[in-house]
Image 1: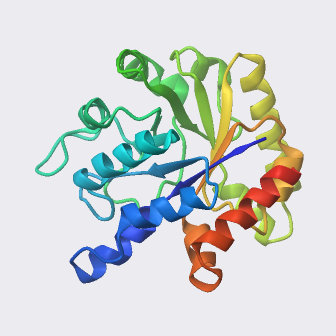
Image 2 (image 1 turned 180 degrees about the horizontal axis):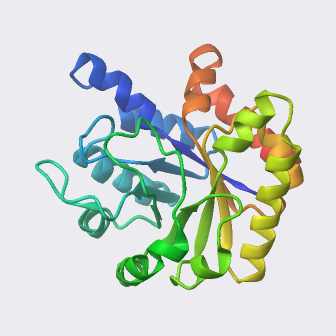
Length: 249
């Protein structure tokens, strides 16, 4: 069964919009785990626009306490700055089960593309090795149609398929080509010995169709849509609804 890791960044966005400690990011993550989520994901940005350094450490402690996976996402090339020690340093402190490397910049509202492995592979290889030394499984954010062989050459354990284009195509009722590209990339990755994760704009509406067309997905990380849906149905009911989709895939 594909595992569900809930991204709680949006809880921190809401908290930061007002200041103070409410809503509580750790309490929200605990509620997701109580409902059966298999893990928690966060993507701390260097500008602290949502989850912050202290949130990462608290969520890591919660996941260790619960015996579930903590997935830490970030750009390993972003330089340290006050309040952000750099991605590898943060992984050294939090020791996530999985480190997902994403090529996002400060100007990006959200992650919107994967690595160019032919261009970035040499720079990624030592970073992957350093994360392995910390005990982290490594996943690299990847576009459908990417050079899987070059990605495997970095030493990564998994790729995470960027599913934004699929979600857009699904909403436009023209998802066949996007699904085919994801399925072929997943097939090639698994043939190369890589695990496959997926994430970005997955929702209750499109997740079942994605998993039916792209077999062998180990994990999905879902945040924005899940929190949107939870505003109406509640976190517990929403997480359980995703789990039903996953169990039926």
